Length: 264
Ligand SMILES: [Zn+2]
Image 1 (cartoon, rainbow, N blue to C red):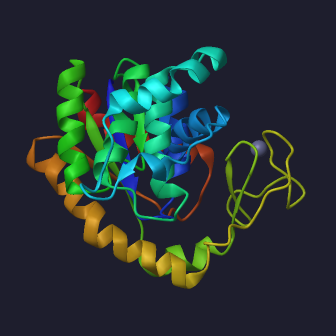
Image 2: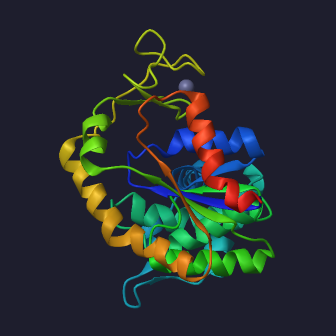
Image 3: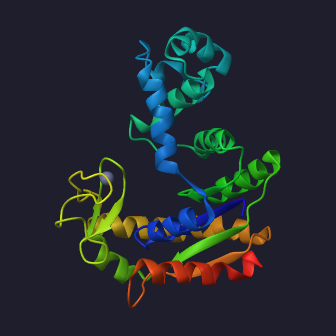
């Protein structure tokens, strides 16, 4: 398998299925959240004196040319031994993220492709990308540019009301991002990460209002994004996010069964 997209409503239960793909096929999880953290971290690590906003040309609603940004960051990047192109992408992302603004697809796409190519565009589980129809089209082009393929879209199905009921029980390790559930996948002693021992947290956006907003976003944007991939012939497979009995072995079996037509 070269690359697979794993998608589903927020809280549907993607991570346990991703864990199966990592252990069964040796794939690497490429999450949008981690991609953003990487590029923002590279830029922030430079402690650059000018703000990202100062590279934004309000008259044209665009950044000044990349060469100008690159020239400003080059020396600091050499000192820190980080690629200047990563710092430029980080600066652009920071302009939106720091202000709490919606990040345009063009920026998200550029960050995605940068990270995708660091892995030679293969062996990846795409998580949190693509989330819009434009991102899907960009992904298809990026895969083609890399000379690789997208084998399938794995959709983790789940019902809205079940997700809402379960999300209040979700806990996350702030240190290694491992996801737990108080009932279905409990942390050690009810509050410690089983992987690294850190105290798990209940995210402030795991409230009913915020979950409903994310569910609406899935209907409005992610479903059309999946539609673009399907229309281009990428096979779609589905696994149930809600299992009557939830064990690692049952999750594994359900993922392998769903993928069996693809793996033939
Ligand atoms: Zn941890």
